[in-house]
Length: 250
Length: 276
Ligand SMILES: [Fe+2]
Image (cartoon, rainbow over the protein chains, first blue to last red):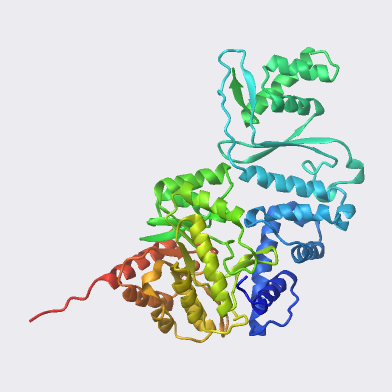
């Protein structure tokens, strides 16, 4: 190492001041100016987190949010060289330290997760998949959009405003988020257990429409009655329209 | 050539309207690595139309921490895949004690930092198999300085044998904040190493302090300093207009681009001597 300890110490003190707001003596630093560094650095962190987690920020009181951002930035060393992925570390930090806010708001962890996943899906690298838009053969197998995340939730963070969620809302919720290929927008779809199972099947391999419905019904110990079939067809049609299911393959 | 920083804030209108006619675009690789979807499509459209220059944010060349070779590998692929013409970075540090800060902190102007930074620039150049163009950053307070800024910069350029990104606005900001003569500073720089120029606006926040916000139009004294620089250079160098905040109508940015072109052309015309 070519750097002298004194130089390192000065750099470390400046970086630490930016992260914590606690200024230790740094040789040569102009006290009336150095605060701009803390302000500029902290604003970048605060702005990035606020734009990644608008719902969480809305839920928390101003004091809670400010304290949390301060705590995160001063105690967690941010690892990502890309500022747009830094907010993921914020979510992970709260879980890692089992933050008291996660107890105060039992649905907060899921809210943060959903907010982060929206960014992740919106930004993720394109995933190539071959398919045809329509089923010319009549025996085509369904191709699901790989740019999606299927998650199970205990609280309806995707259905209700966070401040309105009550302990009684606890249950099983299924949410699929996918990126529409043309606009790049992320769509949220609340799923029933039946359609969730269908998606899980399509994630493992491709199936024909009738195969898929039959197999899913079997999983639930159901017969494929007219209503089940029609509802399933409608779901698949909607999924084709929203590009959750992209099309067909032979 | 006069270019513009390609920003998501105006990407759509820029690509569709033809209101802005730069010769190249510049991006920070960190904002475009590992992404797909809508923004990748927009970026590809831009790449089809314009040559790319890059200006990194997180290399942290002045950091006491180890270089991040995983990250550098991604930078290398990005530069190759996009056909980037220049990889520029900041003469500052943005990571310390294993924590990224996502901003540019001033390196102490010391002899040991000169050696440390120069060694790292050489390592980066070897790893990337291309030259690094390093930018003098604006700073608001010196930190543990033992030498003058100009001596620090020149020593690194010499020892590392790298190129210089001369941000004329940064020199102006620093000369104001730290009370020195901007022209004299530029005159002491090795002009042969200048590969790239940045121009931008800034904000004066108090009687004696300017913050380098990139949020305002370029002011006249910075245009004058640019003209002085171009005359000293005496050759054409790509110039970038940086605008990161307070994005105005594209027509306004175009006016600034026009102004930069005009000054550049006029500065590079040789004055004719009349012989009787
Ligand atoms: Fe610059």
